[in-house]
Amino acid sequence: MQKKHTNPFRFNQVVEKEYFCRRQESTLVSDLIESGQNVALIGPRRTGKTSLALEVCRKAKRKVVHSDMMRVDSYAEVIKRLIESTMRDSKEPRIESLIQALAHLRPTWAIDPISGGTQLTVTPSPQSTPQNVVDTLRLIEKRCKSSGSILFIDEFQDLTALPKHESFIAQIRSEIQHWKDTAIIFAGSDRDKMKALFTDPDNPCYQSATILMIERLEEQTFKRYIHRRFEQTGKTIQPECIEQVLDLTNQHPNSAQKLLHFLWSKTPEKGLAETKTLQSALNLTIRAEQDEFERALGNLTLLQGRALKTAAKLGGESTNSIDFLEAARIRNHASATKALLRCVQLKILQKEGARYEFTNPFFRAWLKQLP
Image (cartoon, rainbow, N blue to C red):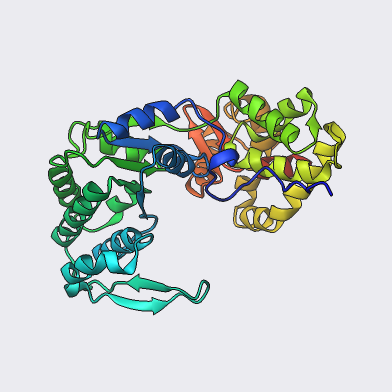
């Protein structure tokens, strides 16, 4: 009996091995971390920064201490996330010394309700200070050095929301500049904040990491990956269908993988994925997110909603044109700009120079279907 293929496209999760579409930045990241150099990966959410970092480390046979700082709100929480990420893949007998070193953090063992296994949790003092974080980093560096691990700090820019973050960042830089054999991968989705952290001469982290902008996948590489994944699972896809997928998703990795997931599902065994199948897959993708789109649109004013719909239908390059103002029924450029910038604040749009782009291409596709 022939083995049934599973869907080769994965989305909304970290991808690795055969599910990872190799990026041109992979070799550079590998070379940098192998020589103990820090790297800063900057790009919008869901563009594959985490997958890139973890896949490069996997191929290099390097363990990773992956700590996500998204929306962290206190120094105690920073310590908690750092320690628990350090413990995630450790075995109980091997962390005895660390538990002793962390006695002041009140480490406790608990039962994981999902796996049934044990997991270590820590409860730092609510009065934890930046120096306590630095002490924790120093401890983690020793463990990384002994095991050849890489420290990966995700959404690094969110540390700037903490009180007195300027001096805190300075303390971090003062500590890590002495690390000789442990590379750090910083990643962040807020381009402006991340670039300021590593390129502003007045910032303590200035030139402390090599910056790589992570955005769209290289077109030809992505096309070959899509074709190969269909072929490996007994199906084929029209070249023009691949072009349409990349056009609809603006080559956004996660969005393209999501649409391709539904396209593959809609394509029969040993069948051909073509344009009519793609439209069905797109409709299915939109339906999966329609409630979220309706809620986001409902939270806008009427003027903001008209501006957003017009940006979807006319594109984000012509927002200062007379045609845009007439289509959106907005009196002047200032009002249109204010409305669109509100959508940027809500992370519905992102601004690239004078151009506005949808952070979710399926939101744009849904708006284009509206009257």
